[in-house]
Amino acid sequence: MSYTPTRSDFDRYMAPNYAPQQVIPVRGEGSRLWDQEGREYIDFAGGIAVNALGHCHPVLVDALKDQADKLWHLANVYTNEPALKLAKTLTERTFADKVFLCSSGGEANEAALKLARRWAYNEHGEHKDKIISFRQSFHGRTFFTVSVGGQPKYSQGFGPVPGGILHAEFNDLEAVRELMGDDTCAVMVEPMQGEGGIVPATQEFLEGVRALCDEHQALLIFDEVQTGVGRSGSLYAYMEYGVTPDILTSAKSLGGGFPVGAMLTTDAIAPALGIGTHGSTYGGNALASAVALAAVEFIDTPEVLEGVKRRHALFRELLEEINHKHGVFKEVRGMGMLMGAQMSPAFEGRAKDILPLAIEEGLMALIAGPNVLRMAPSLVIPEEDIREGMARLERAIAKLVAQA
Ligand SMILES: *Cc1c(COP(=O)(O)O)cnc(C)c1O
Image 1 (cartoon, rainbow, N blue to C red):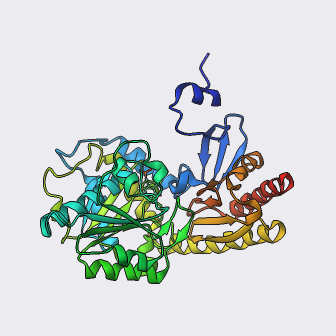
Image 2: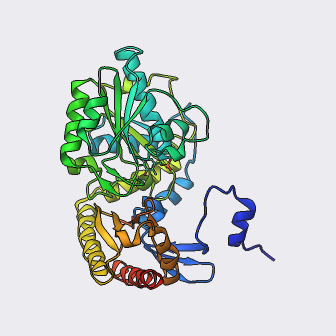
Image 3: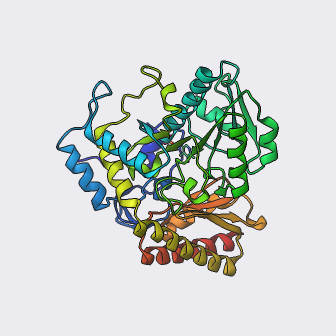
């Protein structure tokens, strides 16, 4: 008899660093998923802002299958057509001139930070090594990126953290100004904090940080791992703000579910990453690049991007309706298909209690910290699925209120 894994196998065989929900989805199509028992779920979680086109979108499936029959992997001793096509497309559609490919957001940020340090070292000297980032920010789980990230719980207990990293309050331009000096190498910021609670940067803040970087010859790094590839309603959120970084990192939606990451930069900065300075075995993998190319070409069209904005308006309207009835949220915020609802004081810290209740009702959602219910659905989720998902969310929230 063939073996069917159960949730208790997770505790038996997997390292205990996650605590997944009890159900095990086995199949997905668009914004719907089915578990081992055949129960159906609507997906507002989107694999944490990864499944940009839902599950098994034909455009991505075709790109993957087509490449699977041709060539999977060569390593960077050789190059390949899909990687070159992806890099060309990304430079044509953004501020960037040069691309470094890798397999995840953390790796893209690691590359960005190393590039910034090396650029400053080459151009200005050893003293210019300070990296400024923000409290509550999240940049990945490598040791450099957890240290730059603004949540100390992710770096504590792992030994000495790398030096030269300073943290300021997000959206507080004066705090950045105080930390900034001629020894500042780079400022790393998410245009909208994701894990930190779905908090958009203000326009003045991003413009001000850009001006400070220029004044001090420091590099501005936008971490668009969560906000990128259509999620904000533009290809990248920097386009919504009209503030251009020197380095941008992308992952999550970039592969629509296939692991891929990219670091984008300019011709002025890229030479610091000279031959042998950095690398990644899987970076530029042909399968990953073929899928990412298909995702970017499909998403970066007026139809899809305008659709993201329309869907955002509908999500907001329905969330406000739920809140009108139940009064559980203090604020609904976000951009495009990345939205957060902050819990009201009476439900302080209870966002995570909604998740199993939502599962009972057939809905997958996320949190961003203890106080924010987060939604990162497919950019092309059908209106019918939004309405049905919201009806399920309302039933989950009614249960939460009844428990209180
Ligand atoms: C998810 C995320 C990362 C880390 O990406 P991984 O692919 O998990 O390494 C980095 N930055 C931001 C803003 C993210 O949301």
